[in-house]
Structure formats: structure tokens, C-alpha cells
Image (cartoon, rainbow, N blue to C red; front, side):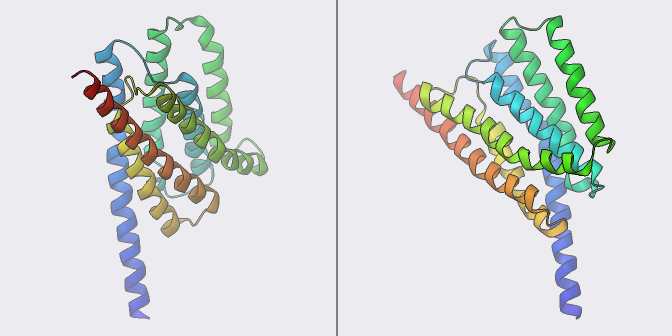
Length: 216
């Protein structure tokens, strides 16, 4: 009995340590991407459709966990991810001269929908459907970016550091979800995201190295 209790305590400690590391990483996870775009003076290589889908997926995860009253340590990083993705979206729109008042109604709709999710103002089945859609949304987001890099054979201003940290955070979250909530829908989402984040990191590094070789 004591061994079981000790094992449970160790797993909980591991989960808490991983959660803290994920939250700390996510405070700055998009900073390399943001700085890469600012230094380059463009959003070359960063697909707007990919970031919009990613923002939608992050918002679903944040509001779903909040509505389900899950431990805040298991999802708090999404607060930073949502805010940083908004900055990336603004930069992409700005560099492509599409940042104007026509974007405001879409932002208002976004805020309204996800506020309703967070405040549990929608039926339970809507929340469950939303979290089920999170996996295909997240997968589509990453596949769009991955295909773009492979097709162009050039990552542009896409940051390997950001995707590398994304790989770590989704791997860590797979473990914490398994330990603390056991939510299969969330676990599947993290597992697939982890694989795609790793693939994106490798592709960015590979094509960036290839691009440098061509200069010599």
C-alpha cells in the first residue's frame, strides 16, 4: 500500500514539474518566431491559414479545460500561446498589408464564441464536439506549414526554436494529461501534435542548412 501511495506521489510530482516547465517554456515559445519575422521584415514562409487554425485549436483547449474545471496547472500555458499567436497573426497581416478595420468583426466573433465556451454557456455536447475537432484542426494547421516548407524547400522566417519548444511542450503535456486527467481526446491531440512538431523542427533545420550550403 505504501509503495502504491509513494508511486502516486512520485507521478504527481513529475506531473507538476513537467507542468511548470511547460508553462515557463510557453511564456516565450513564440518569441523566436516573432523576432524572426521582425528581423526579416516579413512573414515569408509563415502561413496565415496555419496560424489561424493553430489559434483556434489553442483557444478550444484553453476554454475547454477552463469549462471542465481541470487543474489550472494542466492548461495555463494556453493563455500565453493564445496571446502570442495573436501577435503573430497581427504581424502576418501587417507585413501583407491586410491589417485594417475589416478584421475587427472576425476578432469580435472569435471573442464571443470562446467566451461562451469558457463560461459554460453552451451545451456539454458542443464542448465535447469542439475538443474532438481540436485534433483535426491542430493537425491541419501543422500539415499546412509542413507542406509549405517541403514544397518551397525553404523555411523562410519560420523558427526552428519555436517548433522545437512546441515539440517538448506537447510531449510533456502527453505525460501530464495521462497522469492527472486521463482525458483520451486531449491525449490523442497532444500525441499527434508532438509527432508533427518534431517533424516541423527537423524540416526547418534541414532546409535551412540546405539553403546555407547553396550560398557557398
